[in-house]
Length: 129
Image 1: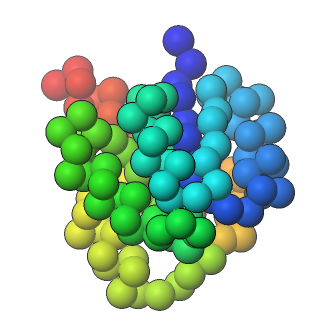
Image 2: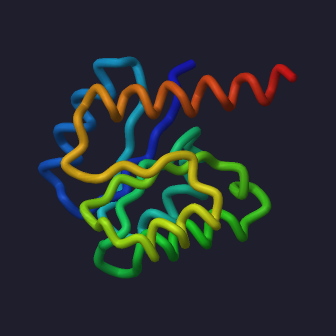
Image 3: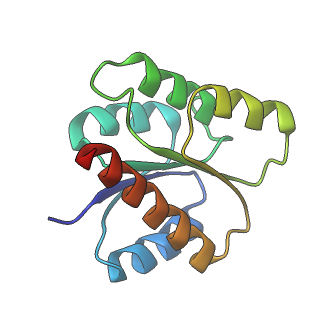
C-alpha cells in the first residue's frame, strides 16, 4: 500500500512539480492550497505525512500544525515544514509543536526525498519496537 502524503502549499507550480516527483517514487499524493482546506483534507484523507508550508491564504501553516496536534486522531501525524521563511521564531514554534523536519525553500528534490524516507523509517521503527 502506497504511503499517502498531503502537500499543503499555495505555490501551485511547486506542488505540481512535487506531485510528479513523489508519485514517481510510489507515494500517493494529494494537495491543499490553503490552511482551511488542508485541515478538512487531513480528516478525510488520513495521510501518513503532511508536507506543510507556513505562509498561506486562509490561515497559517502553524495553525494547521496546531490543529493536527490538538486532534486525538492526528496528534502523532508526521509533519515536515517546507517554507521560504527563515524566521527562527516560526521554526521554534513549529519545533515545539513536534515537527518531523524543517526544510528551507528552494528545497532540493533529493534532500526532500531523504527527509520523507527518514520520517517513514523512524515511524516504522516506532511501530516495531
